[in-house]
Image (cartoon, rainbow, N blue to C red; front, top):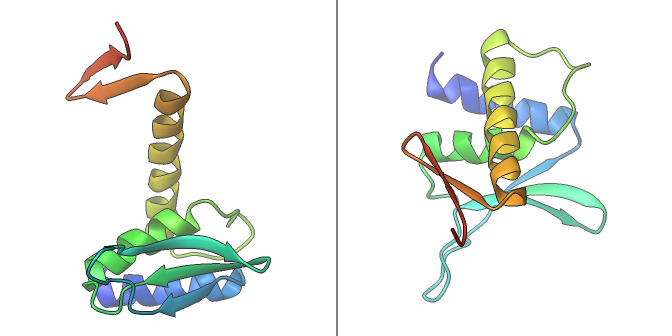
Length: 113
């Protein structure tokens, strides 16, 4: 699927979920942030740097939207698949953070051992 179409589908999903996508300058001399999900006055927003390339915007949207329940929303199979893959990836990362493990190139290391 063309990257522009993927971006449009993800932005539409955000709209359906009631998540506002905000393109705003986030960089300054001391801080560099590409974007991400946050909650402002009980409303979810995804902030993104306008200069972020399309592929970067897609990654930010996927990582942000994967935390929402999309089961009852019609999604193109490709969009559903990338969101599910992001959920799996986050679940694994969360497991490693909880158990003090670091996974590196196929090997698992325990902190402090």
